[in-house]
Picture (spheres, helix red, strand yellow):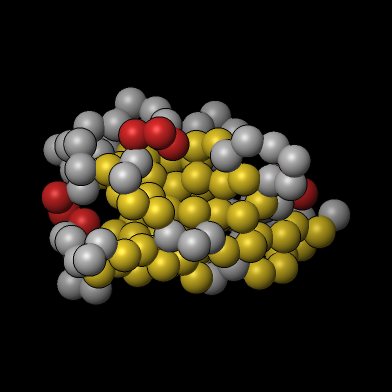
Length: 125
């Protein structure tokens, strides 16, 4: 059974950092495109990043480019989202998701088959 579980969320101050983990089971992350998404209260779920399994390149949305970094630990089958220079507008529930397609051009939620339960990130001003 494919499972993803996010952790590492919490409260941070503006300008601070948090690292989210996406722990997976039931599949190998090397074979799946992994996306990060977030959903703020009253807003639609939006993409943050996606890392294509075909070439391990990561696409970042403009809102997080230069501040967020994705990394992977293949020995732990875990994907990380390092978030620096946090802003209040980064406040949201963050999700990781897996797409069996080897490509990603932009993180598009409908393309992803498997989702974690989400972890709350709150950035205070």
